[in-house]
Each structure stands twice: as structure tokens, then as C-alpha cells.
Length: 204
Image (tube, rainbow, N blue to C red; front, side, top):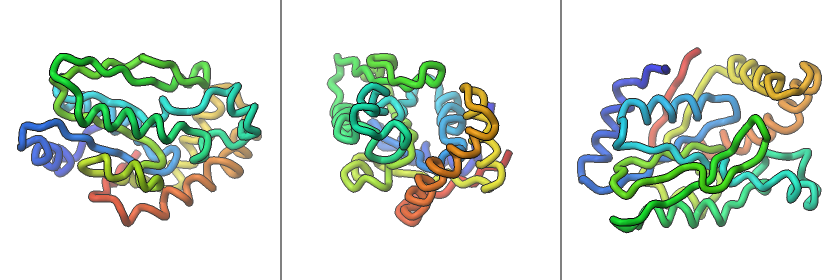
């Protein structure tokens, strides 16, 4: 399990000091390690925390095909931005006797699955990681803080190619997808880095 920097743990504890639920966003370019860092944070805070990824709001493949966006899967307009915002609003005002169910993206089938994550009312910290938390102007204000995950560019590229190969692409197709799809998205994400409350630098 990844080691969470002490400064990050201290920052979360400060967020939770009020006793109220807090929403923490993690943003970074594809391959930056957002999911791994989110899982490590959740492990550090145990039952106090729950990860609710933005990726659960990927549009289904059949809808991407209908819209002519299948070859750009992962771009901002291939997500249900409004649905994601509605979920965050529900999580900010969750009733004491309510369970909120969130979707999850399953890479093994390349599809979102509804109702896969149960968020209990006593959960103090909601961690949501995704590419466009700072890009979408209606989404960023729904978080108490958004952190930018920074990692070495060469390592990030290597992870992306390896990920695409793991899920069925040839090495050539993986590199082509990274160049044509992941990297343009990365530039959009990096352009909003200055809006982040905190930057977390991750190594290998």
C-alpha cells in the first residue's frame, strides 16, 4: 500500500476537526496515481472515509458510440457531469438515516456499474478522484478542498501504456491511444492545476 505523506494526513485531520462531513477531491492527469492515492487515504482513515470516484460517471459505451465519441473516451464530454454533481450535492446533505449509492467504473468490462458503492451516513470523509474536478466550474465548488496529484511525466506515460496493454490493447495501440486521447486530456487537466488547494508529489 502506498505511503501517504504526513503533511497530507495532517491536512485531512484539520479538515475533519469541525466534526462535519468533508468532501476531498483528488485531480491529476491520466496515470498520475489518483486511484492509488485515494485508496491509501481511505485505508489511513478506515471507516471514517469512503472513496467515490468520478469515473463511475463515464457514459456507457453504447451511448458513446451513438454520440460518435467512443474514440475520445475519457474526454470531458464523455462523462455525465450533471449526474456527478448531483451525487456530490447529495453527499453534502446526506440524511442521518440514508444510504447513498454511487456508481463505479469497472475496467475489466470498460463500463460503469450503478449502485456499486454504498456511502453510509456516518462517513466523515468522502474522497472523490477524477480528471476534471477543477476543469468543470460547477463541480469544483462542491468540494471542501481539491488536491492536485503530481508525478514524473515519464513514469505517468509508462503507467498509461501498461494499463492499456493490461486491458487488451497491443503495445502499438496503447501508445497511440495515449498520444491521441490521454495526452490532450492531460493538458486540459494541467491547465487548471493553479486552482488546487494543495499539490501532492508522488514518486514511483
